[in-house]
Image 1 (cartoon, rainbow, N blue to C red):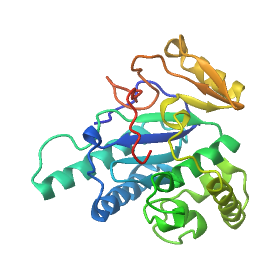
Image 2: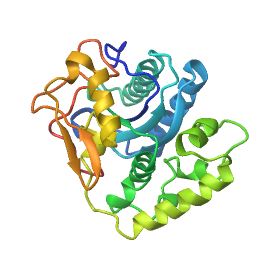
Image 3: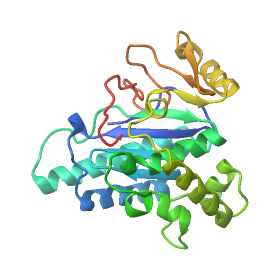
Image 4: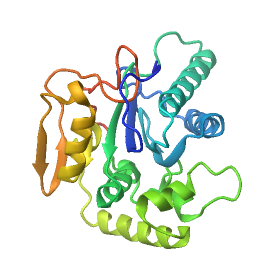
Length: 262
């Protein structure tokens, strides 16, 4: 289970992915997905987690969050959500053993067009899996709240969304976001894009090099790669200790990345 972080870069937006243990479909029931969302809201209440987007599939989750300067908020939130969700499931099913993979992964994403692409990628997860044709058909994602912000029990950080994406009003952001989704649907790829789930940082060359420098000793030996105008701080061929996560297994790169619905 995630514990206090060892490495930390403040002020970044992070795309977090977490898989169920051994790729089991432990989130296949709506009841369990709703409980994950309930604990996500609880993390926002308890720790001030700034949530920009999310989606839940049958065996993994995507979460887009913004760091606001407290190094403990994100790892404590993941610990709460993952711990309570797994505990409730095991108690209900009289099950023992791990519910989640013991390592989750985080990718730092630059707050510009790269962030827009990442958020759209998250919302199109179940489209890529062939489950739905549009994210509006999948109830367990942030697309709905982006389009219809809530006055009460809001999961998403509207102020954070506007700041991260460069909008002054949610209406304008929602309209633009619909356009991004519609445009992406015309050329949606039927496979995952590893840069969003296996890289340490994604963005411009200057952003990625800054992230590498801020990692210090942990950044040495890691490669910066450019593909189609997008720069990625890539991992070595062996597991790494990342930026936000475990004390002993900090956001470890998962070398055998899951491909189903991902």
